[in-house]
Image (cartoon, rainbow over all chains, first blue to last red; front, top):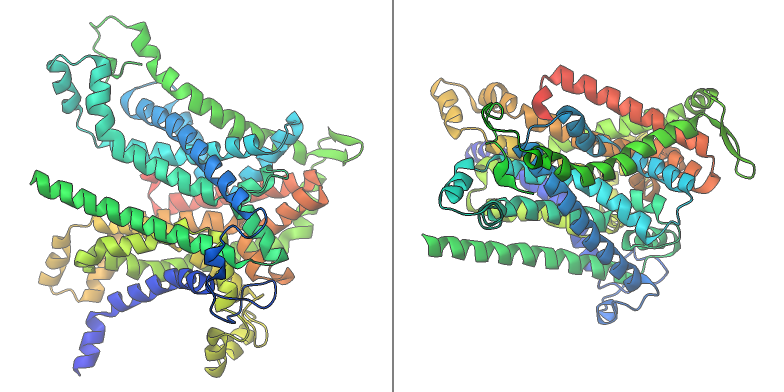
Length: 266
Length: 308
């Protein structure tokens, strides 16, 4: 029975590809339904092909405003979390200091805490302080939960770094600043970039913590959440599809460029 | 900030003859200060505020005062134990499904994908860049009552079985526990696949050959060699799936019904709509304590304490 043997040999591959299909199915649906022309307020049932939403992506009130707000918050949260997180990561790997384990658990805990707990407790703090909920409270919250992820990403990279490279730079009379800028930073860069990318994605897509601490400010995920109650415009799917395509293209081009560079070096 | 003054990472301590340099000694604290301050003020301090809120009594109009009213905890548990139980069981089901579905894919990427490896990896991560709310809403279309999925399951009499088990109701999948668990599984699957892949990828391929040379069948090789070596990935994957799934309320709200409300939904409603802050704080505290307890026991028992 050649078929049974074939099946046995490729069982893992088939199961894996089925899981991949499960992961990608919603994206296919989002893309297909961005060309839909729904009858009612909700875009859940296929009616008719139309490119209307693609021609007028900002045709829904407040949606593009919320999108640009989310991009701004994600940008500043990335800048803040990357800066603070990288500094912590360097301190953790390069220096010995007191209370190291306390520092480690303070960094680990936000990642091991359900979002709703952090969201609720942060809101308690803001309410107690009488803070005005809005852009700043969202930004504070986002930097808080992105920080730990940056620390983990940068730490992994700095730990695998060969300390002899920096020694060599010093032996060649590079000053401390020069060594840091010319040797340390370029080597740590992939870790920092990974942390920054992760922060951006986490912040841009965050709903639970934002929902608690946003007051009446509406970010893009909150707009989508609201529309699930009021009626989902097709434009949401247009944005979702466009983001997916941009991300895939971005990664593919960076891979092609990286491959070319490697070939040139070799 | 001068990094050059640092000792090499693995040096046991600063050599004794070196005069202690003040600037170099303080450097780590300066590096840590801003980030740690941020975490203390906006992560640790809120926890304390929340603990204090949970033992306050009063009303929204008159304000709240700390009265050490621990009965709030008891009342919260009595009123909402079904939601707690539901959260844990849905999250456990989703975690088990994630492991079952994610393992073959992680294995495929690590050992069998060849030159397709990077492409598959991108396809696993890329959905992250479409807002997860939009993707969760897509499940409403996929599981729609008149859709092909429900139709197929119905004609195969699968829905009769799940109905009997209490996972679905009648001819519907939407607004049932099955839909919520399906959404949770979908949303947290990448968090299972990535750590699994990382630990699988580290396994030396020659170990598989060695097992084969010693007459182990593929299944035995997997059971005795591959799976035990991938345990760190399994542990961190299950944690990364289980913890956020327990606190999630998005899937229960979008794909479920009032009968599938999880503890996250209750906390959200208490906090943002009913404005009963002490109850909400107590619930959130119980959730946190429960999860920390479960995670600690789990890490101890799985014997990978160096994980964190």
